[in-house]
Amino acid sequence: MADQFVELLGTAPVSVDGGKLTFVRGSLCTMLSIWKDRYDRSAFSWMVYTDYTGLRDRMDDFGGVGIRIDHPTPTGDASPSSIPPAACYPWPAGSAPLAPEIAAGVTRYGPASLHFVRDSHDLGLLLLADTHVHREGVWSFTSANSGPARLAQAILLARQCGDQELERAAVTKLRNRGEEPVAPYPDYLFRQAVADWSRQYAKATGIDLSDLAKLKRKRPQYPEIP
Image 1 (cartoon, one colour):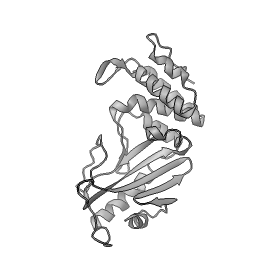
Image 2: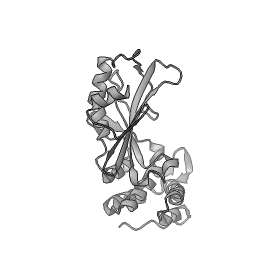
Image 3: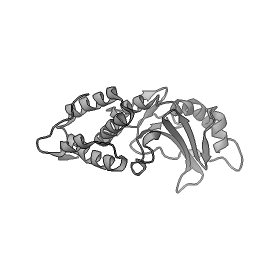
């Protein structure tokens, strides 16, 4: 199965481990995962995840600093989902090739998914996005309730890379949304959630996020816009 995907993608991975194909571009690591359904072993699906290599090991407990890229189902449905796509493709019997419609989907959406994230700066902007970002028929997964965690990750990434433009965008968004409640908790503010996530990220990475931790106070002091 993995060999067929590699041929259809037209790009050689740096490694193949079962159903996991790993590709590296600059500071980004992209993994295409193929898996069988837990209950129906005759069905499978695939998805793509891109993260920043420089924080991968230290942020492993949080899934890295990255974004999931989804593609339409065989029915053509392109509705973003809050959960990974369901296994919806028939697993080929024996050594049979993938069905033509499945192969066409891999050829159409695979390369677009692998190259969806352009660089570390673009990854940071995707983390800051309020909604799913669509490009070339595929899209980045963005859930509303993950906003504070993603913003803290964007600042973490900006400081790791020395990307002041990205940090400026993140702090501006933080200032704009800081006093909003985080659903479904009316007394838990956006800035407080950012503070909680930043403490965990700072502990895991050793990167200074102490200014974000202060946002938990009743009278918060927001970070300066760089």
